[in-house]
Length: 200
Image 1 (tube, helix red, strand yellow):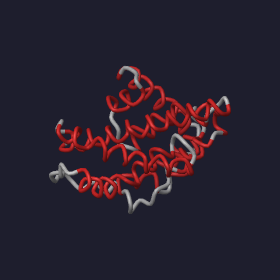
Image 2 (cartoon, rainbow, N blue to C red):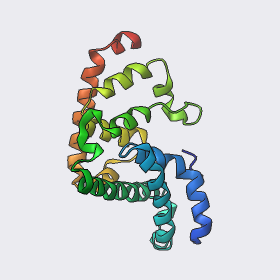
Image 3 (tube, rainbow, N blue to C red):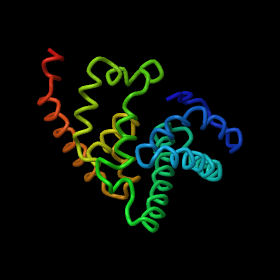
């Protein structure tokens, strides 16, 4: 992710912005691309960091900058709120949004492509880039988008259940339930594939 450890963050929003973009720019873009098409994602990503710049003095003053998990959750919340604004605009114009379009929606393609980063660029994702990643991606494609999304947010974007709950405006218990259900469904898909044989 390029996160620069827990070194002290500057209270100056201009100085902090450079570090935020360097540390989290690609992460935010991937997160946004899970929710909207790539063209919109680039615009929204820029707006995320503009909002972060404006909100930095308050966030830093509350002590959030010293906690990497809280910092990621803050950026994720800004990102998803902006995506929701885009969904509302699209719904007003077209009556539907990508998230509601099922597996043919742009978000489905984005979610699938988000699973293929270079392992050397993101070492903790080496499993996904390994020889079994194709089977895993194929199994994920068979899941409903809400199940796929919660797995991506939790495992790929390293957001914990409280952060996802805050993003979605629902109880943490609901997120835990969704995550458990998605894990079970993914396991069943993998058991139906060659995954078990490969792992042996």
